[in-house]
Length: 421
Image 1 (spheres, rainbow, N blue to C red):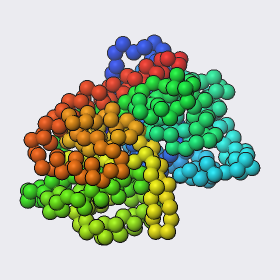
Image 2 (image 1 turned 180 degrees about the vertical axis):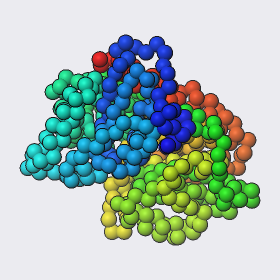
Image 3 (image 1 turned 90 degrees about the vertical axis):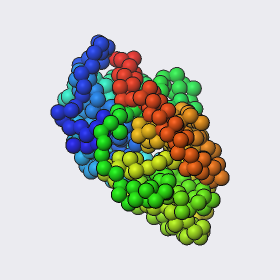
């Protein structure tokens, strides 16, 4: 079993009945390709929400390029999974491929991309796949040419702002018949031609707060003593902006506000983690707690008074003797939606689709990215006004049901499928 937006789901809870399904979608066999198998992050969680809530007339098959936590999550949810590995170069997490020269690209294409494409083509023919849905630009580059060659419609999901330039991005814009953007804000990264075949389908969830569950005892103890718990749900990577939250906390009452960061400490950013620790010590910020990765983060939502996500799109950091160019790819953060369903006020930054999620001054606050003063002001206002927190939380919960439901998301995806059949 695995956590999904509608609760804990497995094969028996899989795919609710749909009514009035378009004839172009009924009986559809959809191949989903996941090319980032290392982490069950937002894009993979969003896709899981879709495939576990297809109507029974739609049959999904998920291909993952390596076994691991993502494949396991889909299996536990009862989703059929096949592993088709790529080689070590294409399977490397990160953006190293962007620096390859023409000769290296040609070698990798011959030794890794072509054998992978052959296996995908065989799978498409063997399973009589009607439509291919890729979850990111890398997937479009790997699978798009095969789909084009076999004349199988290709739908590509754009989960965040443009993460890179160059060949892979051009293929992402060119190859799909339809692009699904998770917000209007990120469509500005697309060329005019690509925008003409793009539709916004917001991420959706079910009522994650519908079933009561456990809370975090030590946070509940702090709340009983009058502390206000500010929770952040994100991997500890530079573009999520933990350094800006630390700067904001340095301006606030450290005895009254406790910030807890719930998310994976990504090993490749160890230098950033060390820099954060030094920054906390230098500023005397003792009320910032790293809770690490949580298989079920919902107890932290239940023990929070408000949530924050201080993400940035782009900035330059000096870490030690290095200058780091930080480039984010936020799209429509799932954590804001989860918080809204929990009736929590949210504070986000004015990037990508965040202003479409948060009704500023009604369900929370939207502040400029990288502005620790504005971030501190928003936290202070909510921390000091329980009635405002309740008001914003109730409005946010209503907004989540109205605009960011699983049903709305799946309906939007199916409508896109029907357009390309």
